[in-house]
Length: 91
Image 1 (cartoon, rainbow, N blue to C red):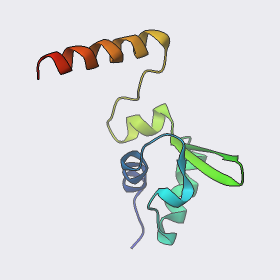
Image 2 (cartoon, rainbow, N blue to C red):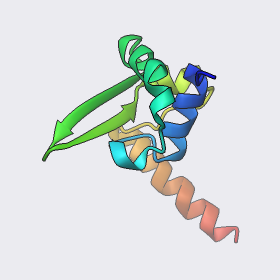
Image 3 (spheres, rainbow, N blue to C red):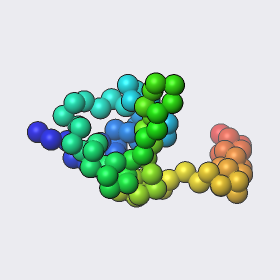
Image 4 (tube, rainbow, N blue to C red):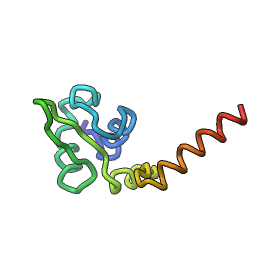
């Protein structure tokens, strides 16, 4: 049975979502067609560095699984930092 595109994206998300080394994704060989589709549709991007292929979800990939992508802008990072601070104070 072929893996659905959404399942493949969820596996990448659970593996860390960004800059995940290929051997740490948890993908199996039957997921290859879904991976090719995900790359061609812009849900996943990859890059090779030091002979290792790294995969990341794109904004469209996050949207496809219904999860808000992280905000890596300076203001987004500041908001995340303050949210972490406030979350720890309530503990």
